[in-house]
Image (cartoon, rainbow, N blue to C red; front, side, top):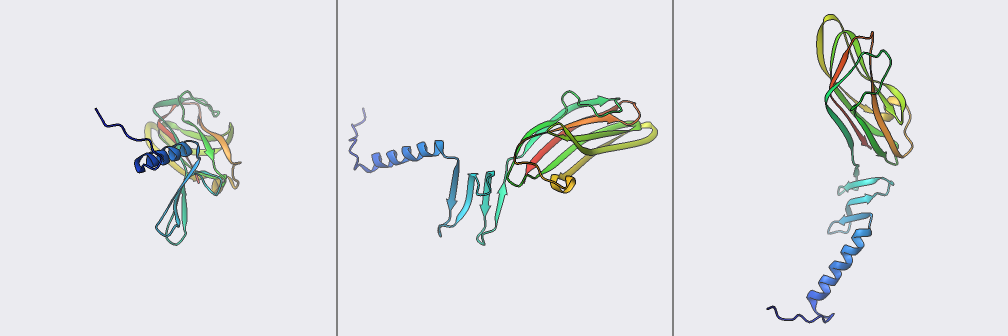
Length: 195
């Protein structure tokens, strides 16, 4: 049997445990944290950042700060096929709901292994249901089938000439065939990285 421990507030161990409990309670409701160096300079911030974004910011000894924001991604390992000559949304096509930060900007990575025979296969990007433009395309003017892994890295503001309103946005894809023959998109992925 353990000896009884005095609950005297002056007891160092009891005081340390009480302090730790208070800090844990405060952290459970806190939305931000900071880590400072020995000179009391902030080196790491997490949670709600001064820019209004939610993420992680790291500062070097010269005061240069880089923010790291969560990225959002969707991947479908199967085949998406269509013979539609108009852009259509296909079941299982990648779609991402992403929180865009204070800058209103993001990087977009999109890729697919496209298979096409004597036609053009096209993948388009939509933001909040509105078409933004063609992001992937493969043309084959021969009777034989060809496959090509197609990928695109896009900065939203550079591509559209504008930024998004900060907040939640949905990014999705549509697909189409140029002349109506069957086109296939394999291993399709979409990643949104707020900046």
